[in-house]
Amino acid sequence: MKKKVLVTGFDPFGNDDINPALEVVKQLDGKIIEDVEIVAEEVPTVFHRAIQVVKDAIKREQPDVVICIGQAGGRAQITPERVAINVDDARIPDNEQQQPIDEPIDPDGPTAYFSTLPIKRIVNELRKAGIPASVSNSAGTFVCNHLFYGVRHYLEKQAPSIRSGFIHIPYIPEQTVEKNAPSLSLDLIVKGIEIAAITAAKKEEDIRETGGAIH
Figure 1 (cartoon, rainbow, N blue to C red):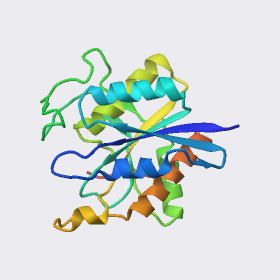
Figure 2: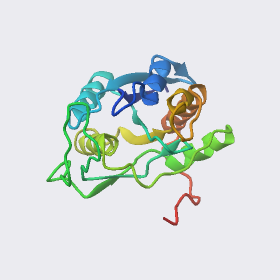
Figure 3: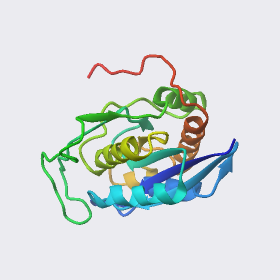
């Protein structure tokens, strides 16, 4: 049976004029691989509006799975996130100069939501393909975590059969010319997110193996 995966990528933010998340999802938009259709949506790096844009895309596309993608400059691996927490604490302003500090995303929502993607299975498949990957236990407190939480909250209430989660990706090489930071090639990240989308669409159950961290 054909499955549909909605992948979302943020526009550039901060001092960057490129966001690899957006470049990745642009390349995946419209692909059909192993009976999995991938559709993409550009998302503004803006608190609250990001959630609404993805809600609208979910209503329009009716996907089986939603994977939101974000840049995590400084990370060296593709990192599926385990948990979204109900707090905004922005170190920098978003693209509309909003900078919430210690504010709940939803005052009536739970403390946290766990990803409903098979995150350890995704990491396992990425590593088998030679792509650096690990589980992350913190999606931060900026718009990435905000969107992760907001989408999970919406789906939990309105469409619990749709599975969703968040994946952070590293810089791409052209972003690190003047930065001392790790990167992965755009082609490798595209391949990694393609594998993640196919894995999430085809395998609901996660595998049980260590993926934790000491700190």
